[in-house]
Amino acid sequence: MAYFHGDMLSGDAKGGAKTALNRLLRVAEEEGMDITQLCQEQRIDSTILSVKGHHVNRHRYYSVTKDIINLLSLPDISFRVGRRFNFNDLGILGHAILSSASLREAVYTYINYREAFGSVFNVTCVQNKNGLVISADAPPMDEIIHHHLLENWLIAWSHFPGLIDSSDTIFKGVHVPFDKPQYSELYHKLFNCPIFFGSSKTQIHISSDAAYYPLNLSNSGVHKLCESECAFAKKSLSQSSNLEQVIREKLYTSYEVFPTASAIAYELNLSTRTLRRRMSELGTSYNQILYEVRMDRAYHYQEENRLSIKEIAFMLGYKDVPSYHRAFKNHFGVTPQNYKNISVKNV
Image (cartoon, rainbow, N blue to C red; front, side, top):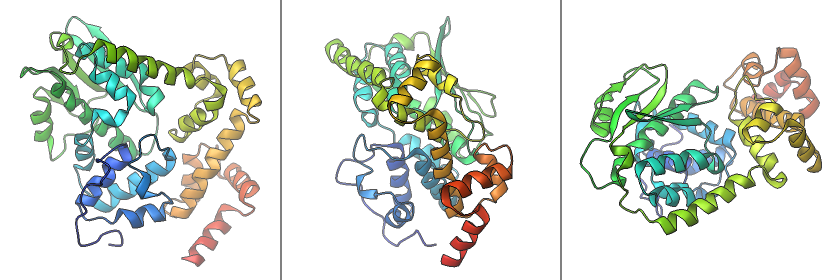
């Protein structure tokens, strides 16, 4: 197979995983995959993936992720990626979580500021007499990516018991939105609680007692400082200079049905009118950004040559193939079919 080589690569000198993609690439290396070649073909510089804060186009991240998953065919690959999670991967948000007074504060710190640090899920937490119920709702996307992201997210929660000095089980239940896998026993070992596979929801339940367990690294001064930085990062999302990137990120995570300008404005605590005005100040618009995102993804879909033109049109939210044809030709100067023919000839 083209992406594999004989020797296993050691961990990188910069200290391991810093991003979700980096964690996946480390697992791929363990399996003998030549990630340098893969990244070159995906136009990603593999040498900078371990640099904190480096922005990787989300659609390209999805594309690389899907390639690795398909090539390795490892049933537990997403599980293994989740086990590589480290709170330091989250930067200042990770430090805010680690310095929280209790598990409850750590959970709410994550939920309050996660969006400013690249989260693609809608995550909520409800506290009742039984404890905390953390739920995740992912936007519509490719089935393989959807499964990978949700399992990765679920398994990351298995690291929370390590934040406290107690042998008690903190979890009361885990709801997994896919069928029971071959490695289901690993879930039970990690969470030590009932696991509900094939659930209609993605949830983590933390007991009421555990919610108030103090954290080993609790430090009110550090937490206050880190939370202030997180609040600043969250506030910056609604600033005009960052709006275009934020909107692009939200659109890159959507498949088939894209959020409207009004929906994005609501998420950012802005009025639709204010959002449009700020976009105008930047010399662009929601429709223009949506068009550019669609064409960028169209280019990658056509280059991959794995989907039919009809499937691409559907994935990009066009109401019919002719509409996609017109947009593609207007942007690239050739029809999707002609572009595909040219790509095949160049292979």
